[in-house]
Figure: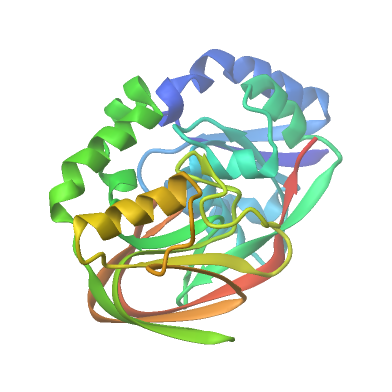
Length: 295
């Protein structure tokens, strides 16, 4: 009998999984799987469980937000044999699930997780031992994703992030950095930067690029220089969200590998969770590294 490891974050998305759990398990069993279910208890719990139990699984399915998926993928990357992944999105924004075209409704997502259509997609390697599935970022507002209390996320959803972002407006500052990739180099003071492999970031589509493929071996990168005055900031916002004329403070490009060197310790966010503090980091695209069931 085929083996399925089902990893659940019970805190994500108002705990909706609790009301659907038996129905989801029934779907898995009827597809011929022997299911081992694990409910996460603390941060990094999902990663540890995948490393310890995932090596004997034919399929690993997780239910939670993008941070839970990050933990599961990080665990899978430690395995010698790469099982297929299934994802039942249950977070506040579920950016990556939207990019994959996965169903938002839990029961349909569960059916897709045990389906025959498999898609191989890229994974980002961050430094020597961390991974991300859709975004690595630093700078303005990035801490909002992991500092927003879970109870607020559950009650307000995406609006909780916006409220926390407004609170952090007074803390905006630049970081002196050097950014280098295969075809170019940037140096200066940056307000924000992100390296992505997704169509949607923070619920906004096309923010970095409208030409995105999750399996082409390339990241889409965006770096924003520190604005000198309110007019500069207004121009940046207009360019990003209103799609107005090009802005000389915003740089966008594609890359397979990128190195970021900062003059000071810089906090990074990986898939919406705290990713560590770095002065120097190299980020590499691992092409078609994981395999996700889509229906």
